[in-house]
Image (cartoon, rainbow, N blue to C red):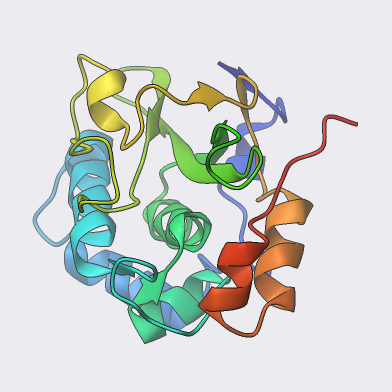
Length: 198
């Protein structure tokens, strides 16, 4: 894996999508991490909460399309990309660097559509790992776990190819634009975002 930005501060910064400095996000992160010590415990807590408590919109048959971390937190749902935005915001609010990674579905799944997940830095291990907070449902190939020994175990779709080996500091614009332009999940699912290599 390689970082899009050399400055690790880029993976701690708030923006209009990853609103880690918003009072509601910061409060939620603090409440969820109460009693947790160190980046590993905090990351595990936040990952499992987003994975399990924020429903994947398709699995839950929800109609709304969320994009920003705050939208996802307040609505309690989001597609994989949106869930990764919330997890990054919660982690950054707790001082844990977090970014974005993407896998690619085969042509059988909407012509190479993207799947979004996270890359995070754990101080105790002094390394970056990838985590998939999509949610453990029948829509996944397997249960994504917080397993520090096996990346495959941390992925909902372990056999999908990664788009590249980059951990992005911000969500890719193709993803954000797609989520923001679709008014409901049904239309989004007919036109899932694709990533450009340009």
